[in-house]
Image (cartoon, rainbow, N blue to C red; front, side, top):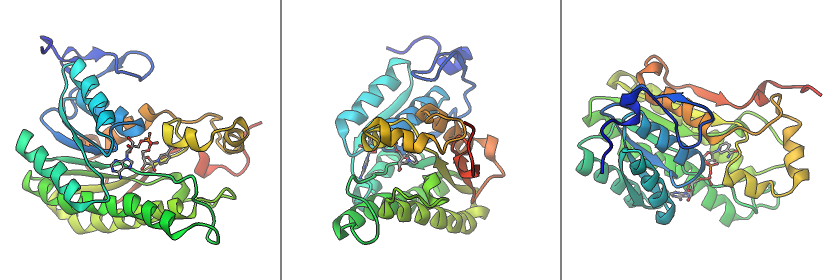
Amino acid sequence: CEPAQKPWQIGHSRSMSVEGPVAFSGKLSGKVAIITGAGSGIGRETALLFAHEGASVIIADKTISQAARTIDAVREFGGTGIAIGGDVSIAADVEKFVTEAEKNFGAVHIVFNNAGIMDDNDGDAITTSDEVIDRTLDINVKGVIYGCRYGIPAIRRAGGGSVINTASFVAFLGAATPQIAYTASKGAVLALTRELAVLHARENIRVNALCPGPIRTKLLMEFLNTEEKKQRRLVHIPMGRFGEASEIAKAALFLASSDSSFVTGTSLLVDGGITSAYVTPE
Ligand code: NAD
């Protein structure tokens, strides 16, 4: 049953995992947002924040049980949305995210192409298998293109909106801890985002890339599974810590809302300063 007032109507509430009291102002009131990979990490936090801000959220994830957990959390505070299982590397699945969004909520205004993988066996150009390269590019690049293929016409039908494609700080820096397929995939996301931004700029459709630094989510923590591996990265981050998924969600909200109404084609880094650093503080 719905509470009398939703958190964003009350004005002050607590999000599920953002530290401290947070003011919700209904920035996405009346909007419909598709978020891929919303069963975990950055996608989940973003879905919760967007729903708190008044959006109806389509929680898309290949693991339906995780998507269901996110939608349960959304409904717990009176938010609106649906969970859909599907794989972003399969065009028909992504088309379904969009048709279900329009069927259930009448429109699509925001598409956050966030789902992505980092394969344990991704290494350098000499050792990385074709299988790892193909799977990484299928999900991280083709998945984003499919989100745009079906999402952009829907946003156009709605009269305009915002596409956010998740890239990464690794598209800006070389690392002696290589993940060649992942890095290539994120560079591709930056390039295709700029092109689509230019192409659709006069249709009231903004397209931006969101570039997280190292964030304390399942994806990264399973990869950096020893203290030594974590420290090897932390030394390069001026702020001396990993970011939180909720900190990326707030940047996604900026790109999704009219707060960023003159921002398109950008690559927004939210990285604790890592891409600006030569020598970090002791
Ligand atoms: P995560 O592993 O916590 O969550 C990713 C979600 O995507 C999972 O729920 C997973 O089931 C889903 N997913 C994976 N493959 C899918 C597919 N083919 N179809 C649909 N859903 C799929 O990861 P995260 O850290 O929240 O990462 C989200 C995005 O942020 C990814 O694109 C990742 O590359 C990017 N990113 C993460 C970091 C980081 O440090 N965590 C840094 C830069 C960029």
